Amino acid sequence: MRPNGIFFYGVNFEFSFNTAHWDERPYTSEIRPIVGAHVGRFDFLFNPIVDNSWNGFSNLEFVPETRVAMAVSEKYKLALEEYDDFGRVSHFLPASKQTHQLFGVIDVNTKWISVEAGVGRGLTGASDHWVLKLILSKDL
Image (tube, rainbow, N blue to C red; front, side):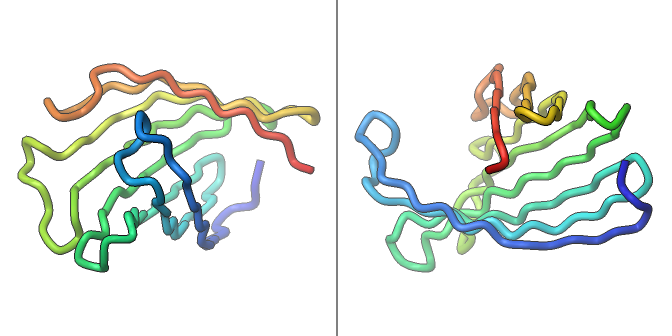
């Protein structure tokens, strides 16, 4: 468990080299600010993410993520996460073309590996209907 009332922040930069079947743009990147708080057994996180397809600032896309997690033990957390895509920052997509997905997630942390697994459901017609999520990580 974490101490009460600890705020944190950071930023993550991702650069991608894409094949045609994954993305029509060969190069993309992501700027992922991270803002959060640990309050008792709960974690609150907001990532106001901006995707960049290297087509100019007017084409940056706003794709935020939100997460609320509850520690049920030192090893396990349960979380709700929402992933959104509002479209270009300069002109959001109409609501019917935006994607919004809600995930139920379980985190398992051991000394060997961390596992984050979840099931997501699209909340709009433009969203994927169902999505499975699995992230395996290991601190080096």
